Length: 260
Length: 278
Image 1: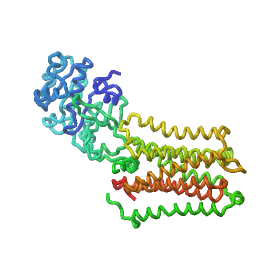
Image 2: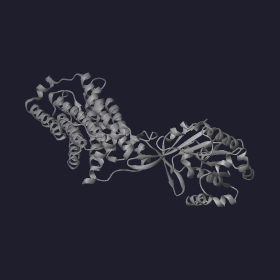
Image 3: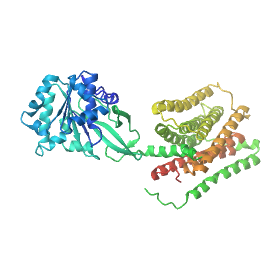
Image 4: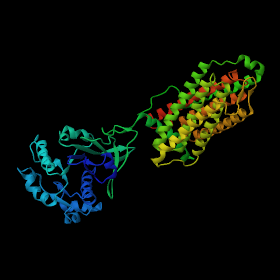
């Protein structure tokens, strides 16, 4: 089965090799969790490491902002565009929602670039332009348009922090996608950390554990699982009972020496 | 969460916790004075099943709990002190349960004594190493090798004592106890060495307790003190199952219970976010 590697080593391991080819993937999380960074890295790595051109369709930011932010991670989007490996498309959601809007907006670019990857940033912007209840229908139409052209899409969804993993399902969006990656902030030992979990991946095994990740100067780096903690997904992480006891046990025998 | 009020203060509890120490020491001293060797054998009491059950419950069971909590603590924090302490506890518990069930056939007194006393010395080496590593920085923050080191330490402790048991069963080890004659010099040397190391470990942990006032350290060092008294009883005992031996055994069982109280202190400490609980 063909896989689309993200190029983020640990994430690809979690995905058992990468996203399934042509699967629609949703990256959900609250503001500041790094959804756009993760999606951009997927596109940049696709273009530079795997020979897969991509389109970044955004309703959110102006192009200059995107190029500048990408440069901070060492990604030269302008160069990739010049090499026909990437296109950054900044537009308004209503253009995409017009009848046949996706063809008018993306048709030419798809013909030129022959992209294999695409990021839509974000579905929340579409939500502002469609009547309540029509978002799923519109999102489905757009995703089908992309998938039938042999492109593997990632859609970004900004969810409420706290119960975001459930907010995605409550909004009825998760059924649209084949794979759901959730990013969220968690407070552990009085410090704010970021947690990533693959909530679902149709037709494939995947790592079900919550993993810590960081946004570094080179992009997303996924670290070790949060072992010994419970309740991270629900927003109230705490150490398991045995871990708490073990922690107190360890502290008694090892921290005393610092007082000497 | 606020700690629930207790009727007895931690200091009072700890004072009560010290009481068994002079009692056991006194009993051993009295029996040593009043019990002639000729009489000891006639009053020896060795119900095999009872002994094995007591060893399993009070020494092996408690050791498993301490070793498990130490395992979790080591995997989480990487402290060598905790790894060595857990390994020593596991070694002592394993040797005790093997000795308990092998006092009768197919083992016999020599096999049980060999495994028990060698296990005590082996465990005491871990304890003294653990106690001395608390005196200097000893945590490995690299979590990569923790599982391997844990497997090596715990597996090594159980593996060594298992091999010793097999060798003792097939008669490939020097005699520790000769029925009708008593303890050999080798046994006395092994027990004395183990006794000294247990006592030293207990003193070092008690010293830490005086710095931190941690209930965990108090009860654990007291557990080691009681185990030391138990080993001393083996040293002074005339024969297996005599009153001195039983006094020593009960002292070690108290040691097992005290180590559980140390774990209970850790539970209280974790509940209150403190390590210094009662």
